[in-house]
Image (cartoon, rainbow, N blue to C red; front, side):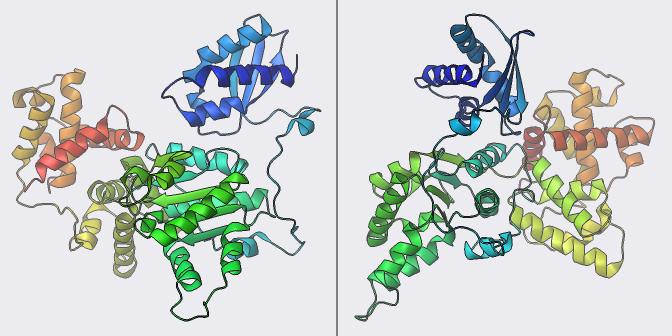
Length: 466
């Protein structure tokens, strides 16, 4: 048994899922492009996929893969999914023939930094510095897959989402990863406004002599292997630009060149954009970056504090990310204020000093000295449908203990009550019980368990409703 037989399995898998609706195209594609080590004596097949982010999701398709294995090998095998690649003697002959790229070969002194600069990429936006969480894992996994084999899958790759969620970071990171693996690829990153201005200076110059030669314009945007355009939503309603971009898109796509685009909205929401262009955007992979969850915000601030050698207590980090949660740019701005405050005041990085640093920040939810603890308790009881008296009893059932711990957390984060005050308020004998409850909910928020983020978000909306 060899990998040619395994290709029969993956092709059969591809045929079986082709007519299905839904599912994850990222996971499906990993299985289709997988390699395998077939151990007949052990009745085991080790399946190797490239993307470590997706290996944990393979179980969704395990039964279908088992079905395909049985049809090809006429026997059942145990399956084990792994990250990596099995090398075989014939593998070099089995590699897919990718599109022909530029004949220009990299020279010995052509290092990565110069390639990044030539491509107009930002070298600080790498895969390694991109902070992942449940809100962006699928987009990250797709980016990894594209950088392994640009132009062969997920083309175009269209990323959309609100400002400050990391779209520009992710698409720059794809470009850098491609240059690491394929240094002779020609890559161009450009904001849409630059593309638009180049178009105007080429085709709509008010003088007879255009600022940019038409051939130079077309060479710049067509004689490349990867085109990355940021904020493509600006194209909507600009007819001449739409037509030129449409022609560029078609030519690159026909030659299997990778196209990567970002926008603040889904392409179907573009106003005044012809359906022919919308359909081009939708023919690849359209994926959104969702608003940053607690885990992402917490890890970002924690990493920045470590990099800046600032000691921030977990309680202080939690306070920042619980209150500045609309987008990453606002969060980074809030952190910058905290950083300057702590560096100039020489204060310790605790919750109280973070509040001092952020008290005047626009849009920041301040601790309301007049916020009634009883209001928080009432809202928690209403949300979880428990009685106030039940919270104060020694009932340790999950139905009561969980809302009680959330109540402890909210009272500590959004009032000036200390642990002892909260213990007295909730009928606890020891303040360490409150400390444990607050730490438990904080950790649950980081790990995203028990729908905790949704519960806390709903309760905060009610608490700070004007």
